[in-house]
Image 1 (spheres, one colour):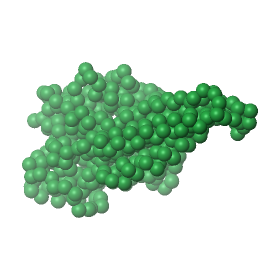
Image 2 (image 1 turned 135 degrees about the vertical axis):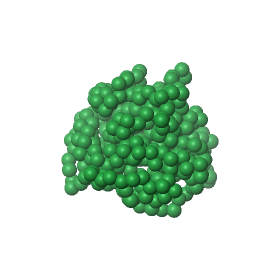
Image 3 (image 1 turned 45 degrees about the horizontal axis):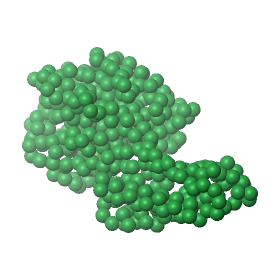
Image 4 (image 1 turned 120 degrees about the horizontal axis):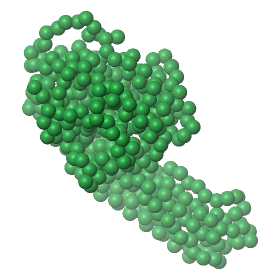
Length: 440
């Protein structure tokens, strides 16, 4: 229900606006702020929120619950497995056009990009949500209702993010808001799993059109504000040998044994990195190989993920892995009784740069000010999102809430619930206007 319907009001003084907006626009849990918002950014946000056009845009978001629910079901039920986002991309492009964006393209990587020209176009601000989900082809993505919860794989992460982008466009169009900067509304590919950020890597490739500010929509809690990137190195490691009969060819080097040695050595030595300094993690997520219980396998493989918010620590844990692999290979080859030595292929299948954000940067300060103007106490975090790439290149970037409440992400039981769903797009609107400039 639109609590603004039929309501007339006069704007309060800017000085009390931050206290007044939360009562008007919705409530959330409060917590002690982690960082101070500088006075100049508070004043800037006060001026933005006092504009009647902005009030109308914020009001619009509150009143589109039914429309947004319909769009969420529509998009969720279009599968978007990793590397196969094209059908959903085509539909999202159509939705951008229907929302009023005239210039809509699908680029060489499969990203959907809608341009909303600004008054001057001297700056480009991007607002993006990823199209892909983690779920493979054939997954049942039918939306089912569980009370107020909507359940379906990918409904929160990140299909709701796409709907948030549409809500922000609708709000700006409805309120006839013009910005100084050009706005890009993006549905990007390749955020999940082995997608390896290929969508944003294409957006920020050498020679690409410049993007001055990047705002990603990916996360449920309204308080969540990601300002730095947890980097990751991912490998598929494959030991290879001739293989043979477990009795008749006994004595050949065994790829599975080498793999087991490598995992054990890595696990024994990794704490030299993970037990000190900034948090660093590692995980052998998948292993495989072999043809039968009575065959020496011809190959054995593992996939491993390592993460840290520090690039130096990430490089350190990577070095421990490389040493463990080399030692395991040598030990298994040295112990063989017959046949050729094993070989190993080490394939990097994922690289997300660790990226240190700056709490005092204009974008982070503006995002914090936007949250506080709506009664939300921002929780500054580092995480692994599409923002990693631009932050690592020195381009202002944050990742913020898609609105609502969600749970069981990356599982078949994933759910999203429209609790304070308006807050995500509202924070997005205010942050975009602060960065892009509210044209007269």
